[in-house]
Amino acid sequence: MPDVVRLLGAVQAQDYPYAKWAIAQRTKNLVDRDVEAAFASGAILRTHVLRPTWHFVLPEDARWMLALTGPRVQRTMGYYGRRLGLDAGVYRKSCRALERALRDGQQLTRAELRPILKRAGVPVSTGQHLGRVLIEAETSCVVISGARRGNQFTYALFDERVPPGKARDRDEALHELARRYFATRSPATVHDFAWWSGLTIGDAQRGIDAAGAALKHETLDGRAYWTARDGLSSGRAPRIAHLLPNYDEYFIGFKDRTAFSERLSGTRALSENQLDALFGHVVCVNGQIVGGWGRPSGRDRVITLKLLLKLTGAERKLVDRAAQRFGEFLGAPVRLRQH
Image (cartoon, rainbow, N blue to C red; front, top):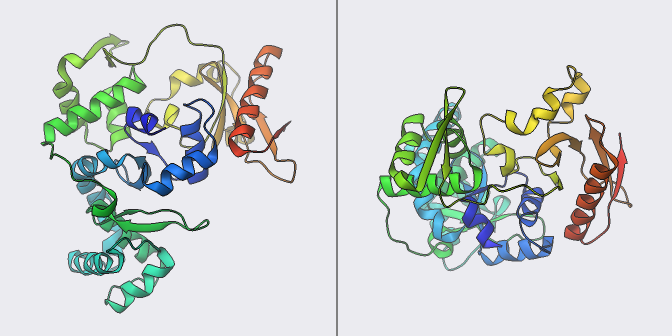
């Protein structure tokens, strides 16, 4: 399972339960409790990296990825911190308080950290204040995810969950991030890579240049696309359907997402209700998005499909099989219902 995260570089994990499903779909027979156990043990970690949102990363990658992208996340979020009256002095004070509270293996929830920060004189009267302070601590390599306590997330000291690692210079880090991105998301453009990584276009291009012979490129309709020479096979794709979770790397990894919505582009203009189906979990058949799906509800764990295209009988069987796999992941069968 860590191999999936390693290959992808990072996996967006804003919606934690479905981020686990995103990992499981890229393996065989992995179930929810397996991913949860890996998270609890620290085999995979969750932090704000690349863009200002949660991602799963490996312990061995957290340090250099945050060194590369953390400062840009801080600059992006700086405006919101200033609006809340937070400054560099407040962040230094909060980091010192967090280091004292979490040392020697302590793992505490946000609710437990709030009074500790208040006693240290850190203004965390609202959830926005507390969240901003904790993101600053994450991107400064002070705290990172601990094991969950029930359904509550905890924070742990970064240096107690992340092993020391050889420092990478900026070009080495850009090279490695570009190599992993294009190995799993090719073909893609510099704009796609910049969107996913949170880097500027200049740094994204610098990463592509640093990767050098590891990448090859071709031009289509005046746009340059790069592919990893040792990337995943580009042979004939199997006929398969996926119930992809929101923020899945299959589409969140690209700025331009037209390639996997070609079937939809051939339909008549979509109504507002139909477009709603694409904001959240999506149904993907043979590489193409064909609609959306809802979270399981009720005792029977009913999943409501919002299909935007008429599927063939064979395609519907593929979707049924995807739902069966999701039920196996959850440890209980699910039932499909079309909206």
